[in-house]
Length: 193
Length: 193
DNA sequence: GTCTATACGAAGATAGAC
DNA sequence: GTCTATCTTCGTATAGAC
Image (cartoon, rainbow over all chains, first blue to last red; front, side, top):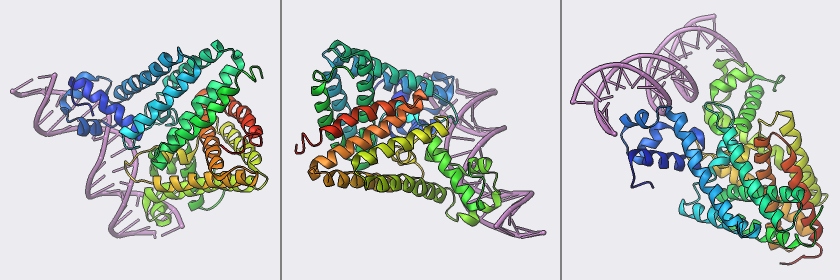
């Protein structure tokens, strides 16, 4: 939990946690306050935009963390990006007792009710796809196939995170990791589609 | 939309639509009534359990539809189940202008707030995995590898549905379909892990 | 089976004191 | 920066008439 830091930081961390656990609809001001035990009177001082601003900043903060992992590890190639992404999710799932998932996916499927941050979610996911695809191109894949493979990687990992939550196990991510390793190994044998 | 049928059926169809578009938190009684233009006074007559019952029955109805598609098509082998699943989602996404996703996933990641139908979501997804894995075993895969491949299929398809919603395009599902075809083709060359 | 009215609670947001 | 009301909106649920 967000123990240290300023009141504002604590609220934001609480918002990130709630976004991962319950989706945007679960990021209520009351829930943030109850979780972080920060003063109610400070909410609109730090977040003049209210609840909507908290959700938006929580999405930015948690989405950037994932983007950073992909960008850094992708410098060592697509296999590295894939491995680090899997490792990140396994760690986060276990640390949160399988109660936390991907905040960007949660926003993406939330629908247009209340405030709508889906455009940002789309941009963030687009960034992941671009980074992974670029990395695949550098290993010799055609741009078209790189894009296709990047889509498979992101889709299967995000889907596996959902299955990990429901089964309360990291097995789905391990299964996906095992199968997609074959696919990466095939890359040089089947470069163009 | 649920034009015909009894009041109860109309309410249920509205609940299914809302569950797919906004998740369980979006299935409010007000939203169901506004969408189906059914009488408010009939809600607790048809659903004594109130909102929670509507969400539960909407999950059963929409989850069963997907289970049925997998079960029927899996009789012709895993490739058929996979193809029909992809086709189902592409059709549903297009028909709903990419505003609707998987109701079971929506429940699975909703968290423990309010009513909790996650156990049922887990059972439903488990059924999909079992059906697909059985089908793979019948084509010669070992039980262990069948389970692993089934997990990859469900994970990547569900993840792709999320990406389809954000990009408002069926391309992610097509990408996954294209890549996983290679994997099915490899099955006979790499039967045991 | 359906209607209106209403009680009740949760949550977002604002105002003004400190 | 933080506190204590308070207002308002929304959503669930119930009661009783028709």
